[in-house]
Each structure stands twice: as structure tokens, then as C-alpha cells.
Image (tube, rainbow, N blue to C red; front, side):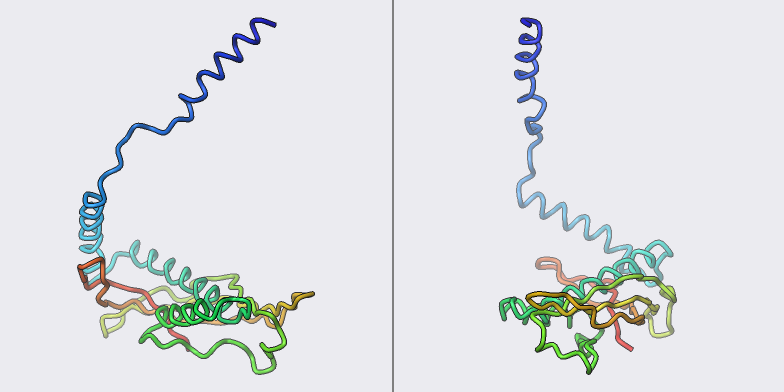
Length: 196
């Protein structure tokens, strides 16, 4: 019994040392900012070149798919009557920033769906696939196509109904544009969505 007690006490004494944070120093904010700018410059050289590698194009395709998911998340906020109006407006602004020219497409709500009948509409993207990989166009842009399934759910206080589930396609456009990084502005490639 005394042996178990000794081992228990010994183990209890070691636990604080095993779970204690490391003694590495966190860099000062100014140092972190300089490191971040150096990383951006290094990445920027790759992202500013006229011709992108296959690896870079695949990364931009992945980013376009993420933006598609962001789009449906923002739509769900816009159509949520319980969300604060300021959040709904911010979601609308964020949607427009995902699309070429800053112009959001018309909402994908079919005419027979009456949003007023529901507390909220939930938009879900599924089965996302690249059907046409990004390919260079003569206009110094790259274009490709994503196919996906969009589900629209109507949520009431007592039920959730599937209002639509349809296969859709959306274009992805990779073009150069100025992006702000703190007080620095760089001309870099950016992938955006384009409806129809």
C-alpha cells in the first residue's frame, strides 16, 4: 500500500512539469509583423509571376471551392430572421466580395420557395468537384468550372424541410488584382466566383 502511495505522490509531483508550457519566448508584435511581411514577399514572388505552376493552380481551385462554401454560409446568414440586421448586411457585403466585379448573383432561391414562411433558410453545398480545371485565357486570366449540389432547407420552429436539391455549376476566375497587406499593396493572383 505504501508503495502505491509513493508512486502516486511521485506521479502527482511530475504532472505539473509535464503539462507546463514551454519556455520559448513569443516574438514581439513588431518582429511578428516583419516576419509576416517577409513571408508575404516570398509568397508574393510566386503569386505575382505571369505563369502559375500546376501546384499553384490546384491550390487556387481549392480556394475557389472554399469560397463556394463561404458563399452558402453567408446566404444562410442573410436568410436567418433571427440574425441581427448588421450581420445580415455584412454577410451581403461578404458575398459580393467573393464574385468577379464585386457583383453578387441573384439569390438562388427558386420562385416557388417563399422565405417569409420560414424562420430561416439554410444553404448547404455538397458533392463539390472541379469539372474544368483552371486554364489560361488570352486575357491573362485563368478560368475553370465547379459543379456542386446545393440543398436549401426551410427551418420553422417545429420542423426542417428540404425545399430544393439541385446540381449547379459556377465558374471560377483567377485574375491579378491589388490586395492590401497592412500598409502594403501588392499585385497578386486572386480567385473569384462568377455565376453563369
